[in-house]
Every structure is written in C-alpha cells, then in structure tokens.
Length: 387
Image 1 (cartoon, rainbow, N blue to C red):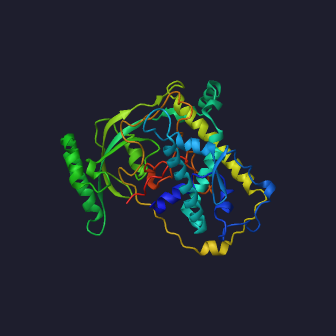
Image 2 (image 1 turned 45 degrees about the horizontal axis):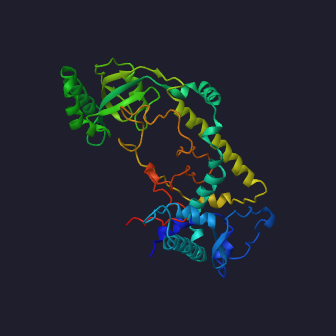
Image 3 (image 1 turned 90 degrees about the vertical axis):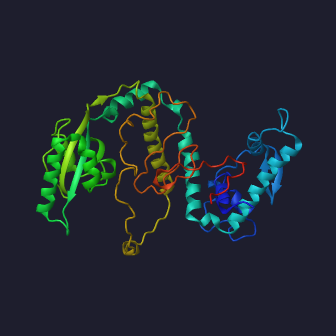
C-alpha cells in the first residue's frame, strides 16, 4: 500500500485541474465551485492522444502512457511485452484512483499539497517558458556589463577571534584583564592562538580555534561589524590590541588577506546566464501573479491580522549553519555554458509572493536548504515516504 506521502506526490504529477470534477464524481468537491470562472475561461484540454483506458470516466491517453512506459526497461529485447505494458497502464490506473480518493478526502486542502500545486503551476506556466536559448552572448555580455559589481570578489581578511564576555559572574574590569593577559600570551607566541581560543573564547567559533574565516568589509552574519572594521586596520600576522564591543572584550589575529578580484565575462559566463535567467523569471513571475490579481476579490481583516501573535523561529547564527561560504568555496559551482535543459536556480522569493516556487526538475523545497527529493515522473510509482 502506498503511503500518504506517495499520494501527495501523485497530486503534483497529474496534469490539469479539469481532472478534479471527473475523478471525484459524487463527492463534495465535484461540480462547479461557487463563483468559479466561466467555462470559457478554463484552460483548453490537453492533447492526450488516442484513448486507451478510462477510470471512472477519466481518460488515459496514449501520450501519457508512452511517457510512463519509456521509463520502464524491457525484460528482454528492445520493446516492452504486452504484460509489461499492462503493468505500466495499471500504475497509471492506480494513480488516477489514488488521486480521486485524495480529492474526495480533501487532501487538496492541505497547505503542503497546495504548495506543491502552486509550485507545479509556476514551474509549468512561468519558469519553463524561459529557456537558456533565449539569452544570446550579446544579451549576457550586456547583463554582465550592467552588473559588473556582482562579479567582483571583494577584498577579504581571515579573522581569528577570542571573545571574553562580561556578565553576572565577571565584571567589566575582570573581563578586560583576562583579555589583556590572553593578548600578551598570543603576542609572545602567535601559534598558541588556537589553543587559547578553544579554552577561553566565548563566541561561536571557539570550537574552530577562533577561526571566523574570510570576511569582507561589509561583514558576516552573526559577527559584530565592529570586529570586522577593526580587522581591516590590523596587518597580516599581527594581533590587535584588546578592544571592546557589545559582546565583550576582543583579541583578534589576522591570519591572511585576499585582494579584490574582478572576474571576466568568460570566466563567469555560466553564472551570468543563471543570474540573467533568474532576473527574467522574477519579472515573469511578478507579471503572472499581477495578472491573476486583476479582477480578483481579496478581503483582509487587519484587526484580526494584527491580533495574531507570531514569534520568530530564527535561530542564532553559528558556524556551519549556512552562512557565507567558507574558505576555498569562492567561485564554487561556476559553470561556463550551462547546457540547455539543465536544472536551473530558483529566483529569490519576491516580497509577499507566497510559496517559493521550485525550479525545473526540482523536488519540493526542504527547509534549511537541505537537498529536496525529486518529484517522480508522470506515471512512475512515487518513492515511499521516509520513515
């Protein structure tokens, strides 16, 4: 028996909202919804090819069957046997029945399922309409010239930090004296910085021997900008004086420095394509949503909205939580000449745009940037949900 997660996957596969009424015949969801758009506004029926089966009146066409069958490897020879074709068709029949049951039970009302439907809609109607071939070298060169600052690697310094905090158990003077002593130990033996940081520092990087990594002048999430500003006044290999920030007293060592680097169009052509395409997708997405808003009726009760208490679920930044790329990662993943049809990046979510659409070929977006499980192909059996 397929899991609930598999049923959800099926919802994202079957094309056309027109299936809802036919498949869910007899249930509360069947029939035209109140205030539904006129039939003339409905999307035209897809060309499914020759009808080879029906499920409660819903047709399965040769085109859908061929797409599913193409993914099955024949047990012998180059073609599927009749029995193998029946297996593929049986899978499609099961998908239609599961889909109908899901609609009958109102699974489509689940916010997660609705997000899958939204993602699928945006991918098909917006993202897939914009191809790599739309961007000539001249267009990409013009984009690069207009956004050259985005392709410059800024000057960076590698900061190592020891932080001594003040608090109920340590007065300001005690914290300063401890920081001064540590600073003297480091000045006499810079190689001791890692051990001293691991032992005494009270910032998130103590477990890395105080190594904050390479930081540009505009700073790094979770790091006091005053530390960054101080770092750019210290010579490489030198230790700073003790200085105070909102966190406490600091001692920093500048381990290395990287000069500003401007990368050429040819070096960054893959990234230029991705950025230009994302920008065009952003524009197309916004236009698509604005078109849907035209004539729509939206009523918001601001009093009730304001009465809802929402507490932030954001966690404090710590090393390894997805902040700026660490040392050695600059320029990683840059591709020159991305092949047509390759999975593309996702435009940043627009303010108020709702669920962030997934890119072509991507699965349902997972929180925290974790890799998402790809959606099964039409007609394929969805992978079992994880335990």
